[in-house]
Length: 361
Ligand code: FES
Image (cartoon, rainbow, N blue to C red; front, top):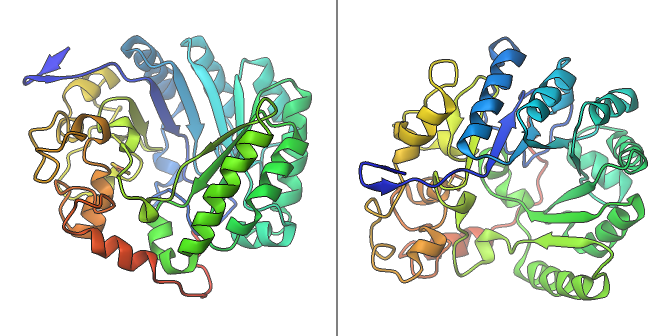
């Protein structure tokens, strides 16, 4: 399919942010600084329609996220509607506020997969990072319940200066909980993480050691657990193909129904986002101004425009280009070919041991 001469593939994944409410206060939360209000959240019937439209568009998986999805009393109905639409459902939860009983009911109505975030392998540190005393113990308990119910479990570990030295222990913890996969995700500096960048940024030595450790763990634990890990942006030489390319693979629906090409897209000024309350998901995917803004390669500037990798990395991350360079059309400054790459190198060298600015609901 093409719109205005730009070819538009079918999306594969939908990130459904059911709510921005969350009991935790993680200083790297990917939610925006201004959170959607409870009264503005989409009702179940609208989510059910969105899931059907997503399935018709070609979406295979829905990631039910937040905030904390369990903050929604109607979570079971929402999961059921995803199942009824024929989507593979993945619940991304902090595990705080999700009871065993609700988890069992979710499994009964067809939930396919659970992903639990754990902040550290050290309990005191984990609770400190989450800004919630007792969070670690609840996460452990719920993770075991997930496995007991026979649901596949992924543990998501967000890595930064305070916990990067404990990657082997975090992988060990994931194994002991019965996870089939662990995601080692270095902090991405948008939203709340950008506010806490100097407090979260690991050192070059820490990153090099972590990369070597992950390679070793993958070897030793092959066949026992899948380890997904990505090199942190600010220490990379090439940019990541953010969200698999703008408007190519996925959509992100906010609690109030705005549809974004990526979770951080609202930081880019002058983009016009359409809302599922007024448009079908298909219309939005095919022709909303925000999705069309960075499709194809006509929008690119040099050095991306003539780069041999432009169809592989798509110029990197549009949000990062705007946040660091003030121009969403510029090459992601993570790329060593960007004239702004020294900005990233400088920021990676700024470390300040200061209290976190916690995200607040
Ligand atoms: Fe928006 Fe990368 S986070 S394009």
